[in-house]
Image (cartoon, rainbow, N blue to C red):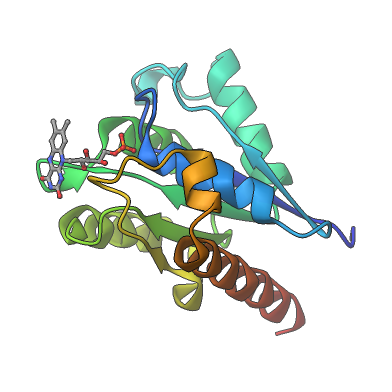
Length: 180
Ligand SMILES: Cc1cc2nc3c(=O)[nH]c(=O)nc-3n(C[C@H](O)[C@H](O)[C@H](O)COP(=O)(O)O)c2cc1C
């Protein structure tokens, strides 16, 4: 097992200038040398169709491979109409039946603290998918309504600390899963 922790970050927003994507990009820059965070893409996934499971669909194969190789998954997703964003739910649906995702350590980032409906629903979905959610790693930061981009996030000590603390807790959670 490598000493470097490999984490896969997925944003549930496809929007240019997405706060969720920016939070994940900021986290990649805050990670210590012992942690590699790759930002995956879910934008090219087809709409989930169980009839197509097992087909060699490039975007699906790439997502499953990235999940399989990751020591942990970091998810940041917006709330739309009190629900999980469609792109995020679609990505998770492609992972439901596979063997890549169950027991995967998972960290959640919420960039809009008022958006608890989607977070609650996301936790329910992930629990159903047998994710190992590291609750202590949960990060809730108020980016909605701010004009902060990645550099703006990285220049705010409160946001930097929240992201660093969450990542540290996540790494500790992954370590404790390995030794338990
Ligand atoms: C169609 C739509 C529906 C939304 N519904 C909600 C909602 O129900 N609750 C909420 O708190 N925010 C809602 N929002 C606000 C988004 O969650 C918010 O803009 C968020 O920052 C988007 O994430 P992003 O910046 O990563 O794209 C909605 C936004 C859109 C475009």
